[in-house]
Length: 293
Picture (tube, rainbow, N blue to C red):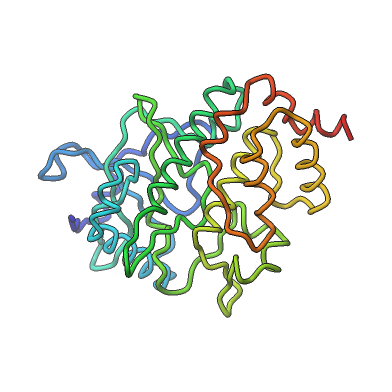
C-alpha cells in the first residue's frame, strides 16, 4: 500500500478523470495522477474527497481502505478495484487513489439505456457473480458489505469485464455505517423487518448480505422493467410479482423477489437471469404491466 503526500499545487496540475456524460461524483473530485507517479508504473485515479470536515467519516473510510489492503481473500477478487493509496495534504487525509481502468464505461448508465437485453442480462449476471464471490469469503473478523450498492458503482473495462469501484464507501462491520440512500433509505418497508435489515441507535441501516442482495434485486428490477421499485408501495410491488408469474420466467427468479420483504434470507438470482428470454423481457416492462392491470 502507498502513501502520497501532496501540496495543493499538485492537485491543481492534475487532469480530471474523463467520465461518461451525465455521471458525476457528489462526494469527490476524480483526478488522474501524472504518469510515473508510482514506482510500479501503474496509472492511478485520485479520489479527492470533499468531506474533510467530517473526520469520523474520513476515519471510517481510512479504516476500510487500510483493512481491505490487508485481507488477502478480498485482494484476490480481481473484479474489486480496491483503493491502494492514502493521499494527504499538510498531514490531513484528503482521499485515496486506485488503479485506473482505461477506456472504462459506467455500467449504471448502460443498464438504464436502450442497449439490447442480452447485454443487460450479461452485465447484471456479472454483478451478481461479484456479489457471490464477496459473500463467499469467510473471514472470521471482517466481512465486506457493499452497503449503498447500486449500478453506478460498477464499471466495464474495454474487454467487457465488470468491476466494482467506490469501495472506500463499503462497510467492514466496524463503527457507525453511513446512510444508504440509493435503494435502501427510500424504502419505507424494510425497517419493519429489523431482524433481517437491522439499524443502529441512529437508525442507520447496518449493511449485511441481505441488504446487499436487496439492492441487487432492486437493481435488476429497475434495469428490466424500466422502473425503480424501491420506493413503491407493497401493493404495487406484489401486483407486479403476480404479473411476472404469468410470464415465462424461472421460478427461482420469482422467489428471489418474494423473499425480499419476508424474514427468509435474500437470494442471488444471477443464474436464473439466464433463463429470461428477450421476448419475455419485453413483457416485463413496467408500462406493459400497467396496461395489463
